[in-house]
Image 1: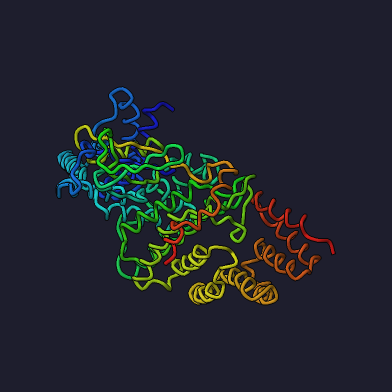
Image 2: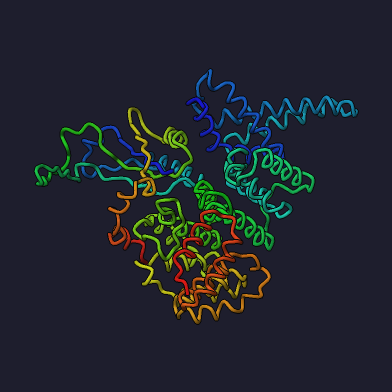
Length: 419
Length: 140
């Protein structure tokens, strides 16, 4: 790629969200808005290498999009004329669109971006469609970049994005920010999308890599954008805190061979303490707003307990158990109960830990979940019940697709004393 | 990837100790800062007092010598910085191009070395970093 192309790509990444959001306010359809914005990008790719990067690239792109919009309308006009619509009326329509697009040129407002985010994360879409559209429209990533991040062929990702846009269009999803009661649930949907993107990056579920930092950084950026757009929503700050605190451990999570290093074995000097500080600030903000008992804020508070401990031994496990108890109250998922059991095992010993795990054996949601067996294996090993431990670890090994996790589990098997 | 955008304001090397930017300049800067924040790229920012309030410490043969500011020989001094997290060097340059700077002012853009980029022996040497005051700041 040439320098000017890389610059155009950078300008696109900075401007595309505002551009699409602004156009969508006029077109009311984010699929059409994105196409027009893409057309403007194509025009930039054609002209900027020749003419140089314009002084106001955002305004240039918006003007180009406007021209394309009017061209498109003319084409539609010719089609519609066949249907007998009065030419004068269409001319007016064309003028109105042009005027509207000129008007938004300098005043894309925060609400436009917020509307774009809520629409991309609309519950009418399947979760993977929401994720793809959000990264594409709000993150400014190319289809190829998203496809690479999720390890699927570009074509597959392209179809996923195309289908999502079509679904929104067919369902006549309005380009608006929900109000009242609906706002709560819709914010929940947006935050879930962002956290899924983060987690996909933080614990890659398959493939060679244990982490895909691009997705983590992208999710963090989305989180910061949301904290600006919805400053009064405590769970937004809770989620941002959770992601910052988890991501602060990134450098310590990978050993010299790229193998995963689990939390308690991590070299804490490698944690990013400026990032921890950002996470703590976001958490305090959530708590000061009275949102300390929200699901993300509680998880962030647990992460904060780890961040505060100078060594694994100094971890305040009893406080972590209390936080998990609160979390179980509001989102009683088996995974939360599983994590609580780990904390119990560390705070009160492996016998209590196994006890807390025992209720989970029959949980259908955890069938096939390798961590349950991995954790049980660890606890059994601590009790010297090596034969049973070996059996559990082998079961976990058969269940995970992530190669790095497989390496970790094999290492455990090799190090286990024979009975 | 993280970048530091270092501001080198014109004439700041000779600024009076009590020099403050004009309200107009601050307003423009706030608008720019807000745009960084809204784009979700801003991690940190600070402005520095004039060099006449600072000092330079130079080292020779294990001896440290303090020279109070202003620094007669300095042509360019730092006035402040932003730390941004972006996806490419070009994106960092694009953000720098948008900063409200006056004639002949300079922004130097430099990528931040991430701990994970260092070889294992350097990482080892950095151990114990968490005992520094930096870490204490993370404690509430």
